[in-house]
Amino acid sequence: MSARVYLDANATMPLRPEARAAMVEAMDVAGNPSSVHAEGRAAKAIVERARGRVAAALGAEGADIVFTSGATEAAALALAGRGLRGAGIEHDAVAAWIDPVLPVDRAGRVTVDDPATATLQLANSETGVVQNIPAGLAVCDMTQGFGKLPVAFNWLGCDMALVSAHKLGGPKGVGALVLRQGLELAAQLRGGGQEMGRRAGTENVIGIAGFGAAAAAAARDLADGVWTRVEELRNILVSHLDPAETETIFVGNDGPRLPNTLCLATPGWKGETQVMQMDLAGFAISAGSACSSGKVRESRVLRAMGYPPDVALGAVRVSLGPWTTEDDVVRFAQAWRAQRRRHRARAA
Image: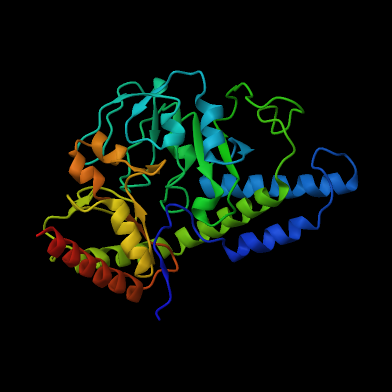
């Protein structure tokens, strides 16, 4: 039996060995980073080293890095009570706090008329579409682009950004809010005044250590051209799928995308069904729609882009990683096309 193939990097990347090693080392440090004794200072040093590594990987030198439990908490800290505007393609963690009124075209590109009152993602997790971030943007969700795209917080000119460790090979349950230096922000979690008074609670020293190590490793990968190779594999995958499936829509294929992401939408073939069929065939992918309480829902992102319900219900996402091989993508293409033929035969 062939080994399983993991093609769901945008959901979470496997833990990098550098992150694992940093976390194991941090486990042996007993102190609380808020304590002033030697053990506490040792824990504090781990947190601050990781803060510097995340800042360097993000191109956010001089900015404030506030560690959180993930990008969802960072979004709440940045957005709660602000009434910012956004688009219907934003991640649920952002969509929960914004007014989704910004227009989105069929290519997934968003028009922002007043950046100071808006939030905009750098790249969409479902379609991979990369946005042009306007200067002066209030909040940018950099979660999917961080580590995959040659972009820096300090270049973007936004006030705040959201990032998450497990999207680039760090541990789950840790992320950060990045703030332009000098920007004031009221804490949502109050108490001991940790994280420069912006997020109370004892820092997750072990997770933060892993985040810092993963960020540094991700930056090296980007500099070494790893994601260029991944993009070549994504294009090979497209070449094995495109000629055979003319009714399948390659969403976001006409503009800038994440180098690893392919969104396929086939009218009449539910994304959740495709995910289950490919799982049984040995491939891990994601549906373009969310499943809640047993109900299959159409992709909110594709609907915001103007696609009809049957297309939005038939979307799946294939997201490659540095571990992906050409054999992986060729085998996936063969298996997906076989399932597509079976579906077509049953529907006839």
